[in-house]
Length: 469
Image (cartoon, rainbow, N blue to C red):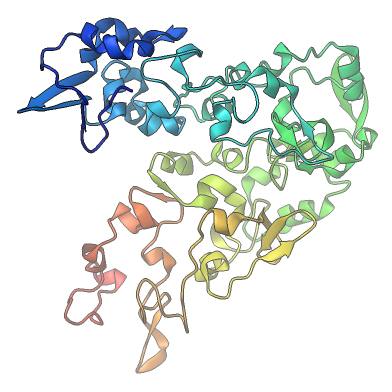
């Protein structure tokens, strides 16, 4: 067995070596390192291109020429340096190349430890991903999974543009990727789509590309007419390869069922300009993997217009609802009564999730949680998966330390007068930050941050009001 350096310390070699030992000497014992089908090109340069021999008295140690394995790989593969790549990097490629690759040789292309096809024990990707392994009895599984993950994915592909293609490392975007196998002109496929034109549609808006709890890989959330195969509720037969609706335009069609939304848009105290257009500007009329049927996803659909918020994505720490679950977790997309279309005023918005009395309602049928009186739906594991912090508040006190207030401090001599204005936004940013805890002005969570309000550390009750800072 060849001995490699660990991140902490090089191992003692079982036999003494001269520090100038030739690579050929290594292969007298370690000839197995180059016997597999795909050999790392670095092997041609010799073992000492990656390893070094250190001799101290009668002790021989063999270690890497760098402190870590990933640092060593990047001396040649600098284009894979995660810190320099804009976009979503495959997590194992950020820290440790040897999670997926053998450093010397392998029977798999690119020196992968396993193939990227086969069952759980044979497929490298399934060492981390559970895709296709646990399909519901009445569900469906994409046959392409058996062809290998690299049929659709290129692991190291990324890009600055946060497109689906870049985020999920796809060989190409849908529908181009899908039609490589699924011919839109196929008669059976056309019949399955009720002879409506679908060749240029984004297939993954309706179909999960891996597996589904429903037949035909249908995504979780479906528009009621679509789910019931009631296409004629909205569509007439296609004409000249084009969609023909039963109403004159999209909005007129949607409001025949969703007139409550039309009334909300028209009567909102704070209107949302984006809701004044066609419903399909934001919504997919058929299906979506997310509640509300967003046309793309529940974040990107908003950031297409709100570029100022999109710019905040560049910061390292994100508020999960803002760039994960979706903007409508906190904002009402069709218009509302509060500034910025917020679902509640002041701290009530934040405490809906983070307050000690916050209790999400369970929707057992759809395996969801609901908040804001049922208007926002979340996955049933949302709180545990995202480790949502619940603040230990009592009588409006208790964060970030015991007895610290979280709302306006009233003047003890005049309870109708605010002495110190205070809210969650006094300390936190709602969307993103350059530091953990989303503190304002991207500040670090330390006493220097507290000093911005508390001018006397010996008497923390002496505070600066926002107007006197």
